[in-house]
Image (cartoon, rainbow, N blue to C red; front, side, top):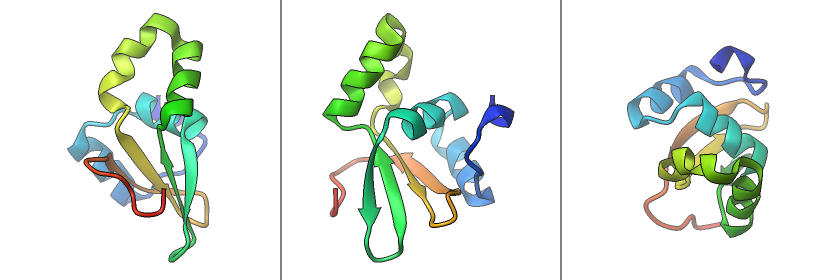
Length: 97
């Protein structure tokens, strides 16, 4: 599935996806449905699942969303060049979100 990904990944993001157990399908869902917030210090965008985006996901995937539940706390940082810089799991709220 990674070959079908439109958004480029940095090597750092690939490593973090593997280390943190975030599959490419979860990253694609995050890129397609996640809420975007800007990091005004570095020019990056942070994508995450908020309440509204979770509702859109539920409507789109229906019962199959159960397979994504463990990734709903995921986030992705996208750089100014539109490449995914890193991914991870949120354990607390973001400062600017």
